[in-house]
Length: 271
DNA sequence: ACTTCGACCTGTTGGC
DNA sequence: TGCCAACAGGTCGAAG
Image: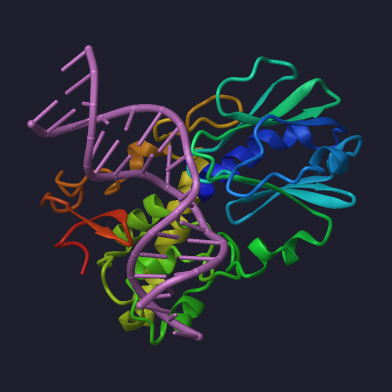
């Protein structure tokens, strides 16, 4: 489900319900997500207050005084705020029950997501330590994108989806950003000029920024934490539109696979 | 060191 | 209607 805008939308949705709340109990109904959920998760969190609900890339970070619960939504995960005790549906794997009698509930049919715990500074966690800059921060620059791409033969689409370069650019927004920047997705990352990386940088920031403003993309089952859908889908220019006319020039959009992921672009607008 | 590819899962969709 | 194959928002870690 989620790319960065969806994760950020979820974070904003759940934060007011978690912040400053004491954790009453963590209920794990199914512990085999991408990795096993730590068996001492309840022991670690029970009775402690939530100090912050942060995000790093697509990882949600629920911070307590002595450690952090790391949540990743994988491909199909979603989070909702419910009344504690509401009967769980299929795939509702974890509840973090709060003293307020509300609970944060994780549902993840495909189980590509993760729920982990770390007692060390979370930034040093193996999964977070090597992440690139946040796309909406000053640390993300066209110059770095350009410099780090030199010598690389991989497609530019694969390159911008690599979380070591920049976090949060998934398949939808990679397609959209490349269209906005007028860059053909199959070009070798190492052969693209600084001027074009400046366009691409701007496009990534704009595409992700407006998606966050609009509450993420609604695809199939995405709803944010209060159950309202995102509204970005109606602004997608290429994703899911293979064979349909380019919104800019009217020619048929091309569809192909790059690294086994659906890729759509306009042959005449993207070169 | 860089790049590609398999693997992890269920649910939905489209073709026959 | 049923069956089967292909596909779906991610990304780690192994293999090449």
